[in-house]
Length: 165
Image (cartoon, rainbow, N blue to C red; front, side, top):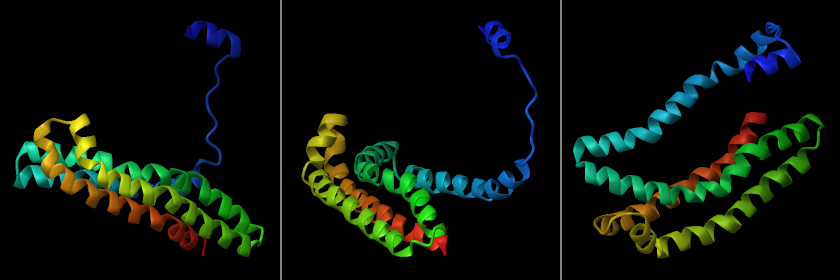
């Protein structure tokens, strides 16, 4: 298959002009991504160190179900920043503030009912997705994680606003 592709389009060495600007912007973000991975997985290691592997499983199951709230925040993290950046560059600051306010309102419109739904159905969800031993303790962890995910996503519009200033 590689032969046919090279025959059709050929092969050229890439040109790396402009790469310096991208590296200046991107390299400082690498430690941030690594630290985010460390903080998101270190809680499981600490639970495993101080407790049992079963407790890690209970926490992990409850954490993954409770983090569903963050699903509603994905558009905020992906689409919102380029949109408000463009508005800020065009000098449309009032429209930018409107986007920030409404994005948080629409997120909360979906996230708050989901939070209550996850809290009410936590035992049933854990029973469907895990073993019965996980349900009692996992149903206590799940609402805490869901509330944490809600607050974490609520910071996104504020963070985007600070990044522009």
